[in-house]
Image 1 (cartoon, rainbow, N blue to C red):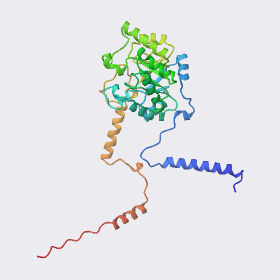
Image 2: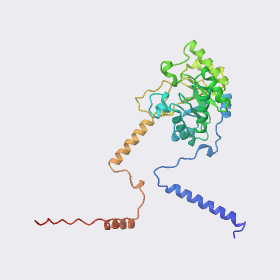
Image 3: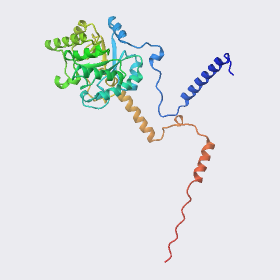
Length: 341
């Protein structure tokens, strides 16, 4: 029988042995993929919440937002310290190769959102509601928002539209789901707008933008994206609201900024079209292309894999294996005699 004094000692020994086994397993793991590093929240950083964003807004601290569409892009965005991560419907064009954002479905958005949610436990997540998932009625909008939160595991949702979407926004926020609005250039409606054009650049358009901003605020949105709006107009709209504005192509006097990660990292070919407001902070395309070409060359000349990338073998086992294989080889066939006439 194990005494009460012995149990703690045995428990500590078991934990130490388990820890050693885990370290050894991590060092010799032989699968074709590697586990991701620890998430930021596990390192003592507090998660960003609605209250965090409101505090940043009150203190006039710019809010950072970046898109992510899969596990690695979300992990990188969080590791860089993004306050918010948006699973945007830009997924359609930058990840799925569609012509525009109107093609992507709610199911596709949810699949992407789930992947992002597995990587994020610090940044505040926002899931885009795609075209066709919220316009029919406030009830449809709420049902889609619930799916994005429950199945997509997002902390909030985003939809495009101003005053005309206020009933849907109110329905969603009244149900307890945080919502980020999106006005100005609304890509899902690009055909109705005559393409990707600057919004708010005339008095009538600026006043319409202002009314949309006030409408979504009153409907309960916790923030609003202003896209492709002249900086002076965006600044006045920001001053008139009591919620943060997140700019994209709207100058640096909004409450924060958002960019599409694929665009700002330079993941596309150099001759790809890029909106005027995009600043390319890296050139992942060039780095990736160089690395892939090197891999191809090294496979072709057999310099990869080198001894550093293969597993050790036992010479005795190898010789025994060769002998065993030779012993099982079929004997050489004997020539068949020609039949007698």
